[in-house]
Image (spheres, rainbow, N blue to C red):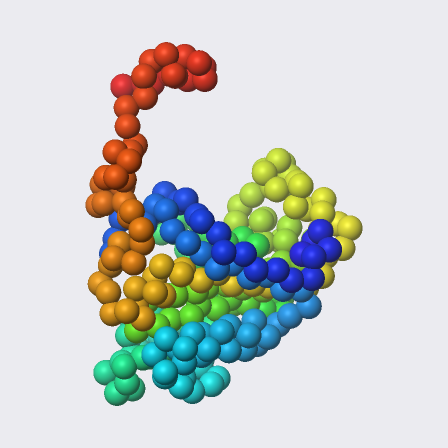
Length: 256
C-alpha cells in the first residue's frame, strides 16, 4: 500500500514454524488481502460477501449478513475463549461471527513486559491514542478483527499503522529504544515518513476453512502431501540429513 498499490489479493503458499496441532501445519495456503482507504467495516463487509458466496456455492447455505460482532472482552468473560464455538447456543450448524475490540497490548507476566497481542503494526483505536500517550497500555484497543467459524479462527486482520508518530509510539510502548526500532524497522519508518494511505487487510487460512466446511477434524485431510505430527513429508522423506560437504559448501556448521 505504501508503494502506491490501491488493493491486492494473493493466494500464497506459506511456511511457518507452527506447533503441530490438528488445525496447523508448517506448510499451508493463505488468502491475503490488503486495501487502501478502508475502515474495519469495509474489510469485514467484503469478506462477509466472499464467505457467504462460498457457502452458497458449496453447501447451498444462505448465511445471514452482516455476521454478528462479539467484543473480545465479552467473549473472554462469557466463554473464556476468543474463538468460542456457538453452534449449540445458536442452535445452528454454522456459527460464524467477528471478534472485535481486541487489546492492542497484552502483559507478559513471566517477563514483566508488554507485548503486541497481534503485531506491532496494528493501529490503535483513535479514541485510545491518549491512553497510549499516557502509557495506560492495558486499556488501549486495536483496530483488529478475527473471523470465527465453529470455534476456529479462519481469518484475522487489522487496520495498519500509517502514521509515523503513532508507529513510533507503539514501538516505544513495547520497550524498544529509538536505536532498536530504527535498526529493525528503519525501512518501514522511512517509507511512512513520505506519507502512506490508511490501509488494512486480512488473511484467511484456506486449508482450515476447507477442513471446517467438510467437517474434517484435521487440516491434514484436505492438504495434498501434508506433514505428519513430526513435521516430516513422508512422500519426499524430508527433511533429510545434510552431508558435511553440503554444509561446508555453504559455510555452515552444526553444534551439539
